[in-house]
Length: 280
Image 1 (cartoon, rainbow, N blue to C red):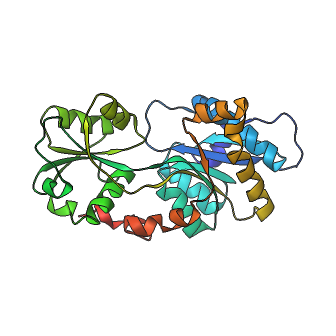
Image 2 (image 1 turned 90 degrees about the vertical axis):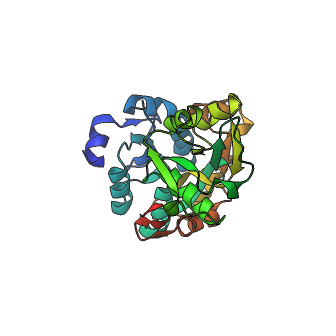
Image 3 (image 1 turned 45 degrees about the horizontal axis):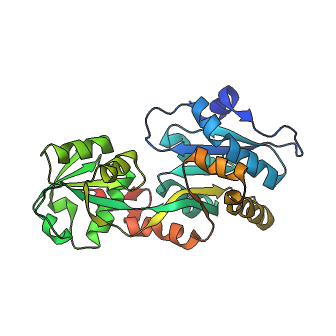
């Protein structure tokens, strides 16, 4: 199913009156998060769409983009006027490949957590060489992220004994139950938050990288971009704005991370559409 079909089937307007003839589409991708459907996304991001509607003086409609292929197509064709998406390498490609413009990223930034069991004798990152490492599936953004961080610290995962699992919760399960000695988790994942809450060890925290970027199609003028940025930065200053942030599950928005987002693909080791850091 393409984006046009999604729009016909499920898009709803979140602003009551229309000022311009053309409604705008905000495509939302939550990556491979399970248990999400179109109705929940509309509820979760409806408040944000309303804020953007006010800033742009026109309706902004939310569309749930379930598949990465749809997200790529939506950016390539320009059908998505706005995209709020994770993993962050997709918006980064929107900037690099399809002429999209930076608007903001979510707070806090993302990190790779290198985890070890509570009783582990490992004391430094260098000591994970030769150990059994557990990571999310090989094609996942976080595995590319963690591979790049380890690469910059002298560890090539292609030369290590790595087990790839489908879900980040499985990483924690493997480490806790002795099927691996070292794990890799996204700092913003439920698995990482649970790991920390339950007293699990985080051996190493990576450099931070932009999380959940919001980008805008190339036809937006500078005034429109600035208006959206002002509205997003103002969210913590009102009860209504705080409710929007709580619904999304973030602390706020950052409008100063454009350079970092534009450098993300190079940091990951991405050439064209591929990220070679996690490939064998």
